[in-house]
Amino acid sequence: MIIVTRSQVTGAEHRQVVELLQQLAGSQRPISATVMRERQVITIDGNSLDAQAHAALSQHSAVERIVSTHSPYQLVSRAFQSEDSRVVVGDLPGSQPVTIGGSAPVIIAGPCAVESREQLMEIARAVKDAGAQVLRGGAFKPRTSPYQFQGLGIEGLRFLAEAREETGLPVITEVMEPEMVDTVAQYADILQIGSRNMQNFPLLQAAGSHPARRPVMLKRGLASTIDEWLLAAEYIVAAGNPNVILCERGIRSFDTHTRNLLDLACVPLLHELTHLPVIVDPSHATGRRELVPTMSRAAIAAGAHGLILETHTDPNSALCDGRQSITPEQLQTIAQETRLVAQIMSDPAVLDYVA
Ligand code: PEP
Ligand code: MN
Image 1 (cartoon, rainbow, N blue to C red):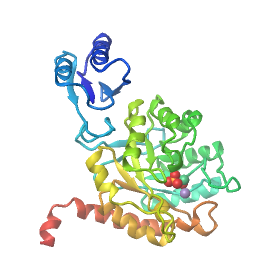
Image 2 (image 1 turned 120 degrees about the vertical axis):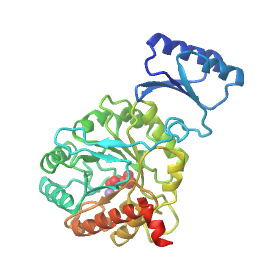
Image 3 (image 1 turned 120 degrees about the horizontal axis):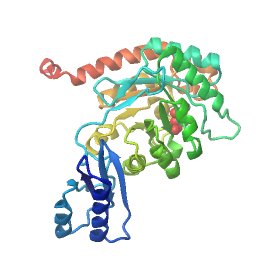
Image 4 (image 1 turned 90 degrees about the vertical axis):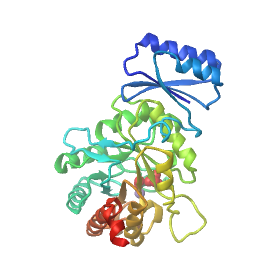
């Protein structure tokens, strides 16, 4: 249950509401409070207040509305906010800001890993020319084997900042541990929380409570349900950062032809359940570059707000994920095609045309 207070409540009024809620619900039940769009928002697990308690709370002069959700997540739910969230990315100096969550699909592209200054600068220029609006590149890489390339670390972050300065592209990079959130937030316009860390709760809380409120792209866990994923997003929002973007990157399955199973049905389903923007990663979802163009078009047709595409000027010699990396030329075609698909999807006249 969510209690939204009026926009200009005093600290004393806010405390009164929390105390009243504690009395009504029992002091053992954890209550969390955060600020969203200038309003204090108080959340409590479940909807278990009886009608009398509900009425007492709604009559308090500081309470604007009470939202009952039947889902385990609250602040990220459609019940709490009916309009789509739009997340503006690119608040570091030198970035050209981009909105994720509107009708125009956003293309994020770049190498899996930052390998060297030259490699990153070359790819950054190429993806920008091909139509990407955000540059990706991993500086800290979560690798399955300890013997694989682990990323350039802080040096990689510096190269990303340099690429942003030259191209104007906001940058996204992965943060793997809570202690590194502040450092990565100094360089990155978007913090990526990877699949393997989707339920790293201290990391989610650190990204949520960082004072810069840097947008966070939360990738779906390797074998996570949609509810687990949305509850992970809830951790970030409840900690104070509403700028969350969900990224479907495929889930574990039994077939070995593709690296993962791209769950495109989750896109329209998420639009029902949550107001957060959703983007799709066909690179990690399929693991095969030849499948990336088709699944990119399909993702946009399913309602995704954007794509994240691993792109390399020399995929066959990439230090990480070359098999699924496309070239800038392929990226250009995908960017054009997906813009067209998005236009068709948003143009009501298309339905007349088909009829
Ligand atoms: C990545 O984006 O390079 C990555 C490691 O992704 P995931 O967490 O989805 O495996
Ligand atoms: Mn990768």
